[in-house]
Length: 536
Ligand SMILES: Cc1cc2nc3c(=O)[nH]c(=O)nc-3n(C[C@H](O)[C@H](O)[C@H](O)COP(=O)(O)OP(=O)(O)OC[C@H]3O[C@@H](n4cnc5c(N)ncnc54)[C@H](O)[C@@H]3O)c2cc1C
Image 1 (cartoon, rainbow, N blue to C red):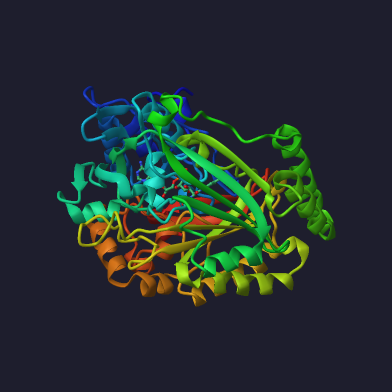
Image 2 (image 1 turned 90 degrees about the horizontal axis):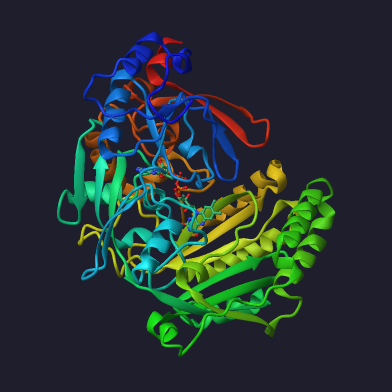
């Protein structure tokens, strides 16, 4: 079936009242570009689901039309960007909407650097379009595949003590609410909606346009050095680790007691254009190409069956990738456009469990985690990504720019620890991951942490209520007003964020019906509409 109004045969499995509604559009209604038989899965194939309809709208009118249809059909709509959130957050058996066909740049104001775009644009497209007019995104996370709306909706961050969340540059949003109404919000217009939409986990409405303040294009001069982790901790304690450059991130390999520090500073584009400096990629070895990728992938896979080889595999792969020596002899460097330099290769399918704690607790956190990890079996651990941000400079509650659900510190710098468990060829680490993540989460909670919304974590609603207090109350209030029928609400939201017991569930809400192993790895998730669940 093509991505246009569905044909009768393609809808034969739907309930008659829904079929009738979809097949008899009024003459003036916008197209409803929906397909059936779409298998949705996360980038890491950790979760998958089979939505009843997969909708690819091309205009705001089409998005509003789909929302109104969903309301009449008693269906939930989940919006998915690039599916990079590895949890069941975007899983649905109801209607799945994707804005990949709604991804144009609408306006660039060269005086203010304000850029307005359709919300399905991916970060790599945005960066390329900005580069054409001499602009850039000042801060990026590890990858650029995400949609701008997905980045905003989960609080995606990079690593810098001069920046906060990527969404701190957002000036204005347009959002289609549960009633189909289009609302504009900003720090001065509907500010409560703005703070809720700045991190909404898709539960508030569909973000359709985004106005973002770009910066003049720049390059980044960077270098990367490997050292013993004790040396990195010592530097941290002397306060010379995180402020040695504008962008700093650390990859920590606790079982090898080594860490990779990457740091970079901006270089104005005028210096590149005038020939004062020139772009330079880092040296590459055979290991950086496809061969290296497959060697590591296969060795990791072998380690699933023979865990005792994993320390050797890690030593070998780490050495091949970063060098076997420590200190200045291991340093590599580059000078690249920012949209390239700030990214890193995230390799394979993985589970990621990332928490934000106060930066000053960092050395204690890593030492405690390191001691505990020494006692675990080789297959029970993975690398830890260590990053920072400061959300107190560009955003604040007083300025109506801090998201209600922001996980970062309100009064100082934040440290993110991201515990990674690879899934070579989509094989799950199983009980090893449970052991590791249980201990890791216990420590993060003990140090005052909050989990990154996009990632694989366990926490209870009671904990969320304690951590977010009045901010969560406010977010719920705004959400309930924006979407009173629960057209954007699924079990992930109910489990972690929303109040209310079973009988108080919302009319269009989706509930979980079951989970089973998917054929090609991960979990196949199934849901059902709340009205159906209440009949059972
Ligand atoms: C390899 C990898 C590297 C990553 N690196 C980082 C990193 O460096 N820093 C970091 O913080 N995170 C990182 N992440 C997490 C990632 O940035 C988030 O998962 C982000 O949400 C992904 O964007 P997406 O477009 O894939 O959104 P999805 O995962 O598809 O959706 C995420 C949420 O956004 C909602 N959403 C999507 N579009 C809309 C819309 N139009 N309106 C309303 N809601 C919407 C969805 O409903 C869902 O709740 C990484 C993830 C992976 C897999």
